[in-house]
Image (tube, rainbow, N blue to C red):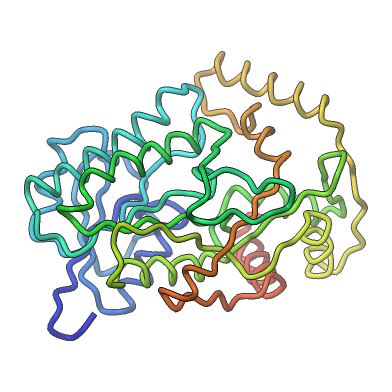
Length: 330
């Protein structure tokens, strides 16, 4: 942005792992940040920050109209990755996105950019070790991925009215991440848990590199475009585990877990989540995702946005592990 540009930004999902990092980065750059939060949202990660909180729920369109007034940029990160009810994925990730863009069209049609954080899951896994590209046919394999893709599709009809850019990040890790914490915990105990069978390939990206890519995409001249955001390197889970063991100064022992055992565990997890009405920590759809190669090509983001991930996996894991230990998560 230039100094003459307005810098009033609405962030949804600002209380989440990636969203909170985005909020910190935007404030550091001198932007005026407003976070959309629900009435019962845990806002501790935003404590003592110079920002404004506005109440609203993306599943309730009328609650969004006040939030989008006089906003220059919207970063839409709110969504869910786990749910015991399949319909909830579509209510939040798909319909919620539709509600927000419609509120912008009605109340703030001169919005400078609507940035939607989708996911590599919306495109689907790489097939036969080939990295997915933005113009490839999408083949999501989970309801999470399908709901994020539906969100993308619902935005298409507004592209001629409001500048919209979509980013599809790969698996994200970093300080505050709860999803990769379980893998860190195992490795710290000297165990590298692996799904049995062939090696599986993945691209990981440190949260700070993802945030930089999001800001580049939002502030770019490009609209009606999709960009993959990821690290430069492709890794196996074996390699990731070995890097972690070196960070912890331990010898790691690989533990191959048979697929049928994990499938049984996923079924049990789903059963208990249904009984106790909680979100399943692990389910069969997540297991299906674990079987795939999650790799994408970031050439387009590099060439058009100037995106350049700078955090190496070793440095990123070291920083993340230190944060976990300092905050007593490990």
